[in-house]
Image (tube, rainbow, N blue to C red; front, side, top):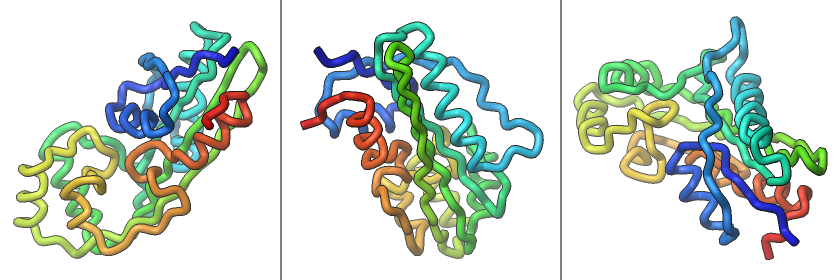
Length: 193
């Protein structure tokens, strides 16, 4: 019998991505404080939060295989989170224009009953165009990406903000690296095919 699979996330983007694997899963809010620790690098923050989210839900569902994920936009070592509003999104995009960022997307899969715990990182290198203020404003008004790390949705109009994307896991930029997730689910005993 296959274990219950739970996505420890409130992100609609991660939920939509996970449906691509065509396996039944439930969703639970992980209720984890996402505040960076003093001096914590973006990569370490993403990895820590992915594992904390998975473990927070697994404590309530120890028999389940739980997936946690987190993404932090890394601008020269500085973490950029979800802007939350128009003013912060404008500031983020102004700082990012003409810059190369690394979107640090981490995923963790845990099952407390079996003792399985694994995490991995899928860094995505993104080169932003040198955007004019008017273009930034039009984009933000059109897409309102205030719940996205780095204020841009590459799966939508946000692709027009970019010069290049470099990744070995194509869904990582949207928020859940499915190649790594599928590998970890198989290792945890979840049969995808």
